[in-house]
Every structure is written in structure tokens, then in C-alpha cells.
Length: 240
Image (tube, rainbow, N blue to C red; front, side, top):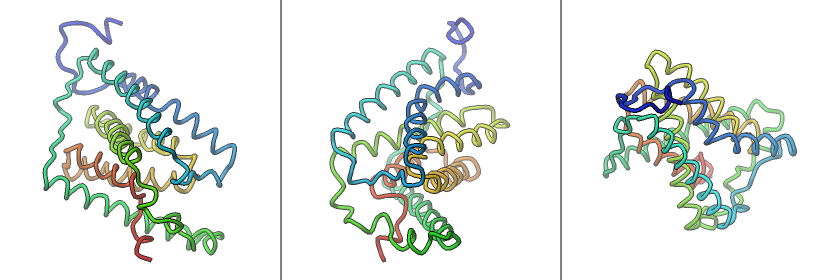
């Protein structure tokens, strides 16, 4: 325990492999198990419709995620993690930038979906009806869903970007690949294709912006993720 939580240590800026594994277990073990069980139970039809999520479920999910985040922050505090490297800058410019990032990700996801349905044998039936076209988005947005979207956007991206990339720069690519696997594994309840799309599109674009274009303001990613949670990761269907 002294190795992990010894006193009089310098601020920890680069997490170790065991840090990532412990935090991954805390944040996503239950979600991965539940998602896998749901997928195995219903296969490719295991897509949860947004209108089926109740306010009580949203608030319960917020309670669970909030509790797990507290555990992780306690762990990082004990590890003397340098939280100052997490940059959160919120202003009109960064809000606008986050919206642009969402639009970029949503359009790429739309393209990914259209390409899949074009080459898929089920494209003529599955692709003809967008999951967003059965209802008005205003009918399913509620206070609880918006609050949960804000928490979930922070919950996921603080892990995938703030934690998984807080490692030695030369090791980032390996943890990035690991993060893609984790991002995929707890979205399988939606079906393999949606989970794969979320994993590749969201994961790759966010990673590229954060590492290659030096967009290191975490707010850009947590807020753009929040928008996706509220209205869905796609926009073309709203104009068709």
C-alpha cells in the first residue's frame, strides 16, 4: 500500500497501468457486465429506445455514477494525482467549439451509418427508418435526462481523455486502443453496430483532436458528449 499511497510524494502526472485498471474496474465493470448480458440475451435487437428511460432511472443512474466518481477521485487524491493538468475552460468560444465538435462527430457517425446500411443486407429495412424519426426530440427531453447527460458526458470523457491519456506520451497509443475496447464494451446493449460506431467515431475523433490538434480543454469533449446524449449521435435524420 505504501507504493500506492505513500506520503511526501511529488504530484503524480502520469498514471501507471494498475491505476488505469483499478479506475476502469470502478467506473465500468458493472456497466460492461450489464451491457454484455443485455446483448447476449437479445442479440442484435438489444437496442434501448430513448423513450423507455424514466426519470427515476435517470436519477438512479446519476446516483450510481456520482458515487463511483467520488470513489475514483478519492483514489486519485490518495495517489497524489495532479488534478491541475485537467483543463476546463468554459466561455462562449469553448461552448461554440464544443457544438462544432458535436456536429463533426454526428456527421461522421451519419456517414458511418449510411455506409453500413448501404452495404448491409438489412439496409433496405433497417436503414430506411432512422431511430430518431419515430418521435420528436422535444417529446423525450426531460430535466432528468438533461441532468444525466451532463453527468454522463463528464463521467465518460474524464475517464477516456482525462485519465486514460494521463500516461507517458509514448504509451498513449496503447491506452487509447484499450479505451476503445472499453468504450465499445459497455455500449453493446445497443447492438454491435451502434457500439462499434460510438467506439470508432467518438473515440478516434476525440483522441485526434486532443492529441494531434492540442485541443486539451476537457470541456470541449464533455459538453459535446453531453449534446450527443441529449439529442443522439446524428443530425441528418432530423432534416429528412
